[in-house]
Amino acid sequence: MTITTFSAFKSRNYRLYFLGQSVSLIGTWMQKTAVSWVVYSLTHSKFMLGLTLFATMFPSFLFSFVGGVISDRYNRYKVLLLTQIISMVQAILMTLLIFSKHYTVWEILSLSVLLGIVNAFDVPARQSLVYEMVDDKKNLPNALALNSSMVNLSRLIGPGIAGLVIEKFGDDVCFGLNALSFVAVIISLLLMRLPAFVPKLHPKNIMGEIREGLLYVRKTPDISSVLGMLALISLFVLPFSTLIPVYAKDIFHGTASTFGVIDSVIGLGAFTGAIFLASLKPGTRLRKILAINTFVFGFGIALFSHTTFYPLALVFAAIGAFGMMSQITISNTLIQTAVDPSMRGRVVSIYAMAFFGMQPLGGLIIGFVSQHIGVQNTMLAEGMVAVGIGCLHVYYLKKRKSKRNPVPILRKQPADTTIPV
Image (cartoon, rainbow, N blue to C red):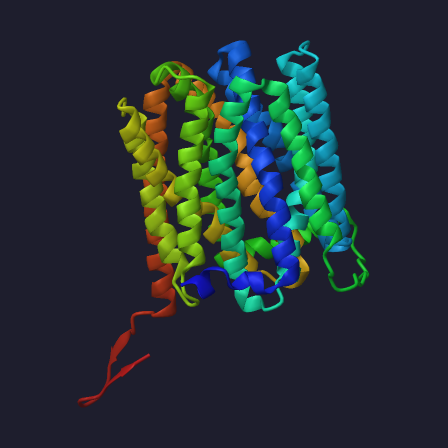
């Protein structure tokens, strides 16, 4: 199992990337936790929590196509290095703002918008560059699953640390540690030895390449179906995380540490799911796993929704997060292994739009709905939507299987012969 689970670590560049990103992502989750806590403490508004998610993610939605084209046109390594440096500058500005003690929610949201724009260029370059970091391409699914485990291990550790730091040292220290964490990923990128970049001719302009990418996705059902399901999950289900501060503060009557614990437990469930996916043997039917885990995701958060016994609620949150992991990791793996290399950046940008772009819109919807039917009923509804999307996955699997194994049409023939056509 160990060899299968960590086979991507055979590649030196990927090892460096993994180590650097691991440190940086812990800081990123610390900042996400701190932003949510600061905004809710200032406003006590569920809608503002949704707006915070919107401010961070919607700019990524708007600029993702451009980011994808840039990733296909230019040196992805240099693009990634630049986005990490700008992200560090954003983190420093956020730290100085909070340290000043004279800030408004709108100033925090403005810096969140800046980060969202940077992410529009960062995600296509980073996801596409992973392909180049892995020497043996058979280890690509393992590398993508390890990426997810890295994200969710940081989600497990980051919020818990953030809760403690906020209580013991203050918000500004939490933001400052995130700024410092970018040093690790920048150093890891500088230490990499990647093949020399060979520029290619691009006769079409940016809009032409965007249209080419959209047409490619539309004509590739194995990719478009995955993206469609992910978009639905991102719009209606993944924004459940925006309601967690409300559960921590109002339902479980806790503090910033309670919020950090719940977020960390969600990270634990997702990390376990990512390790499970990394341990799958080559040739495993990933689409079937995706369908099953969509049901796990839905039932997990549905059970969490109305559970008021805190320890049991944490168990349900972890179960839901285990299923959630497949939405991100398997979708990414199916796309990365099926896409034409010349389209990788653009298709990854559409994946980023489906994942990051729909969540802010969903965050606004969930924030609005929760004001009218309550947080717990909203969470229950999100779980049921996930179950419905799981049914769509099953339907697509059956449809795909029937196309590969069509039922023979029988025609009556003279005498005693019957020939399938």
